[in-house]
Image (cartoon, rainbow, N blue to C red):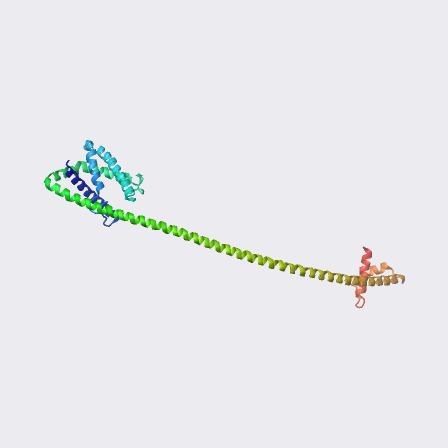
Length: 310
């Protein structure tokens, strides 16, 4: 194949790949999605993939199984390398299959590899023979002119796209720097706030300590006053107890004199030949015996008799 023809095939398969990607993503997202690395209707990775499959898999182009499996491997390796290179150049993830089963670092997945395997079979067995016949019918001069125009358009699109990506990357880096600076300022502000709060806490603690000292001093003074009052009350109570005890002793002495007088009266009754047993019997026989004028005397006699009986 001539270089011009290779480039035209590259453009053709890049355009068809863009069509497939755009239709698929537009259907999934239910809105128009212009897929591809470039601004124009091209997906260069599909063009490179198709050319690799055509050159590397010529020996197995008549075997569906071998072509399918080999196409899976070749296109998956190309997709993985493309993802890695774009990420390193622009520090961006262009696609991520981490949410899909059987993926490798989110760059390739089994489902897409199977689809690329089927596309490899379709391109090698059906599409490329038709494309070869179609391109072969175009005059060489026309192919050369078309290739030159397309090359100029692709190079211009690539320049504009890469420049835009670099500008966007610069803005993102600047934004990241500002965010880092803002974060640093936020951390500084947080540190200042923490320091201010610490100072306030220390001042509050000192204030509380001074208040606590004042409260302790006040409590000590109140305790001294309370102890003095308590000592005075204790002495007053002791004095009153002594006075009451003296009064109680005088009362006991008075009662003792009355009891001695009663005892003398009982002795006089004995001298009048009144048997003590008679008084005991009468008192016991009539426990409710009462005399309005001598009720207390009878009670004393009854108690006296009971004490003798005990």
